[in-house]
Length: 455
Ligand SMILES: *Cc1c(COP(=O)(O)O)cnc(C)c1O
Image (tube, rainbow, N blue to C red; front, side, top):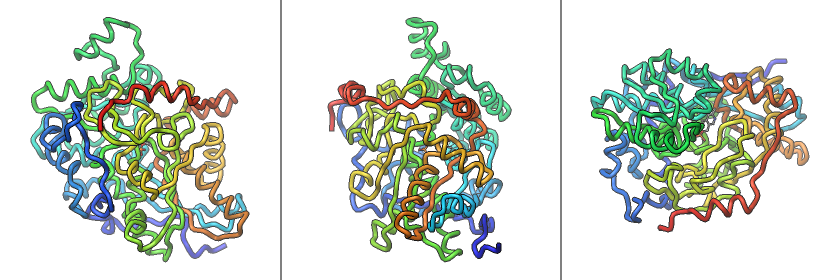
């Protein structure tokens, strides 16, 4: 059967957008400002010791609508972009829905996810500023892998603090990072004061993202020519990820399509924020009114059950405070939660938009998410990342609602990455050993108690 709309639409490489879009410039109200721990408003200069200047500048820029993408970044974008916009015909047929389902696939690069879009930008600006190296943390390893590729490309030293339990369980991630010349250190380590203090108290400490962040920041601020970089949550990261939404908008225009519903998975909010940026702009400015839906795991439900409050961005309580939906920086998602999306907070931009009613949010349990992932894999031939499978589940549920009502809605979702590095989780699901865990209200109240008393 001939389909009028192709299964996959690739833009021409010259059609890759040459500017990022800064959604803040069109927001009616701005997210609340970042605060220092003493409660005063943080200024751009305050973050210079940690972040490089151009990135600090982007973090604080809420007025420049479009920001030029430097040529050096565009030329590497052209190596692995544009990312295809796909029409899920087989999934639609299997569901028996009148809805049209589109997805933007960001898994076609070695990091296996959208994270490379911001890694490339952050590595470029560090190099451009004449820095020698950068530091970061990684949990499951996607961000570390993306940054290793980017740092390798620009010839920048990279030190990755990898949560010890992942370091031991995911040796292949470490191998990829080292192939791109990154230095990977299991955290907690004896290379920092904070790491040594933790190991002294507990030599078998298996590490946490919070500790890895604290170690990476300590090295960045105490090593000449080094800065720290972060792969999600920050305004600058959402800015870089707007490339996803801008490409999608253009591809849909070429097809004569526009989404009624836009869906993304939400960990720290960067792939979601990037995908929805132009559609959110249309909604804010009244040009159109798509529904925008964030999907999160029921085991780490920051939007659906968190508090909109000032909180630290790390569990070590060393960063400035951001106003966001948070479960409390001490919240520990259950160890049985297989996929990513384990962050306690949410991008301040996406938090503000959700708070102001521009976005909806739903939470799903992981076994249901993996069922959606397997159905999608069989129909579309792509093994999705568990994170991305949350968006798949959201899209399937909306398509099934269309089946009931007979409405032929256009659904767009973000397929943020591949699941090739998550085969332990697929194995658990295949063997029937995967379980669900939902925190109780008492669990959440316990962690809300430690929210900082400011703002
Ligand atoms: C890191 C990651 C996410 C979650 O991060 P966001 O900042 O919320 O986008 C989602 N999907 C994949 C594939 C990831 O690697």
